Amino acid sequence: AQSVTQPDIHITVSEGASLELRCNYSYGATPYLFWYVQSPGQGLQLLLKYFSGDTLVQGIKGFEAEFKRSQSSFNLRKPSVHWSDAAEYFCAVLYSSASKIIFGSGTRLSIRP
Amino acid sequence: DGGITQSPKYLFRKEGQNVTLSCEQNLNHDAMYWYRQDPGQGLRLIYYSQIVNDFQKGDIAEGYSVSREKKESFPLTVTSAQKNPTAFYLCASSMGGKTGTYEQYFGPGTRLTVT
Image 1 (tube, rainbow over the protein chains, first blue to last red):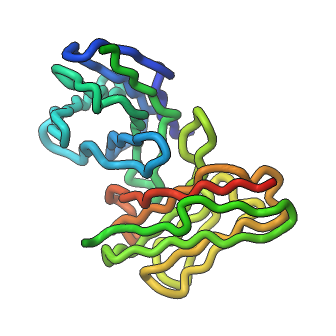
Image 2 (cartoon, rainbow over the protein chains, first blue to last red; image 1 turned 135 degrees about the vertical axis):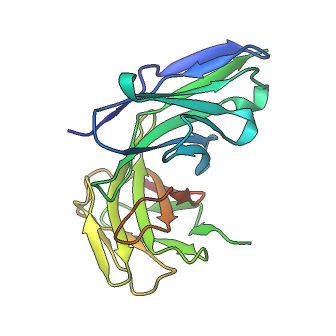
Image 3 (cartoon, chains in turn cyan, red; image 1 turned 90 degrees about the vertical axis):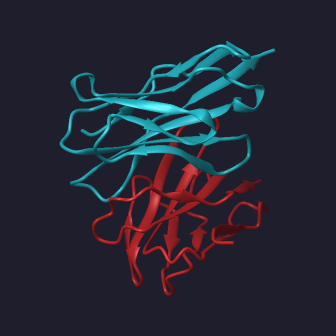
């Protein structure tokens, strides 16, 4: 079955430190990959997407993600986090054979002053 | 400004009553979606529509109904048959019609509380 796994439920990092959020998806042909961010009580905002081409994609708010087909991963990174980055982050996958996106269960990010 | 609007932001209902959540988009997107989000959980798909006058059940459609009479609108009715309706409801849209290979854009959500 197609699935998306975000192994970290909650991560705390210090302001200014680097960040990496993990995402793994079940094997499938031609995945389309997304990262979304959600502030409390708000909708989801698209951070970045990967459809094809360069496996390192840049997004908004200084985020980037790298697609690694051999590891079935699409990890999100940021070199230096800001207090405003505290939020819930969702990885999502759309397979070309499907018509709906599958979301991971999310990783909550807290920032230590 | 183009976007997705959901109203109201907060909704309170008594148990046994049906309630309809509104979702409107002016992005000219073909596809629209309804998700449910419970505390500490990801998004679960309720219903989706890839084109006007057509919609499909998602993973948790029981106790919900939808209509898609206009491209811009995709209202969700939470019926009295839904056993645990209190949740945060998110509407989304995307360009993808039958192909579906596009990112989704989300509205601000409606928090429904049923007592």
